Length: 301
Image (cartoon, rainbow, N blue to C red; front, side, top):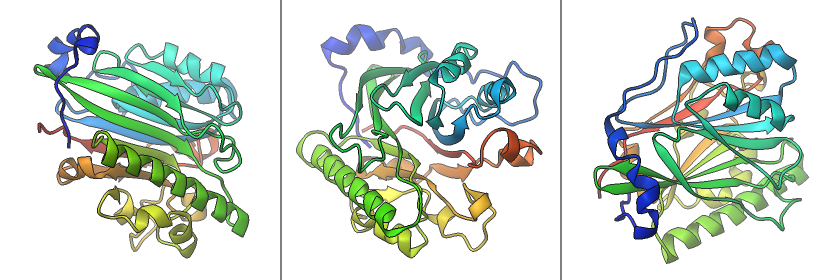
């Protein structure tokens, strides 16, 4: 949890948001029974692997538009985009969102949808440009956001990523190396500059509750003073009902927060969005991954 006074250089950018502090959740324009996750007092961040989007063409595109509009989260981090032009089409069909695209990544791309009437993107970057092999050619997409709260801005940073898949030793080692680099980067930021509110999401391609996962994510699992997987309990659940990747009975889509968000996490919610409970054709038409959401209330300093 961290707050800063608005810098003069950002005043014009964020002042247009002052009147939005009490904005009401926007209802879906579609006749669909999926409940919205939007709450007036919170920020909702969703991670969602869309499986070679759009593998099923126009029908899948239209279904994703409907689902995103109905869920209406504040930030949606998407992975495994095969055709970015089709994700642009999705964004254009949803006036509540703007899209930030991965530029350096050119295969299985990533995108971040956000609400411009609520959030101002202050900086966008793709991390570790010299580590293509380690990150499977998918460079983590980082966006620093500001949300106006009264006379000051609440800052938080979202990192969207998609780590190397598979369970052989070389892939596990690449995930281990990737998360070690990420841990070093985040640790440096929070200890030498500003204690930033980091939310790291995506398809981590390993399960925290397995020995493989313990190897893949050693750096973060050994640093509980500074980082916490909000998906920890979901991954370690006794049943597989909440799995984000139920076809393999595993939890792969994690959300990690830095220590600045530990206070917010005391009242936050992390849950798997089981869209397959609403759509009988979800796994065949949309994705083999379920979305996972982190909802938190920004706290003043």
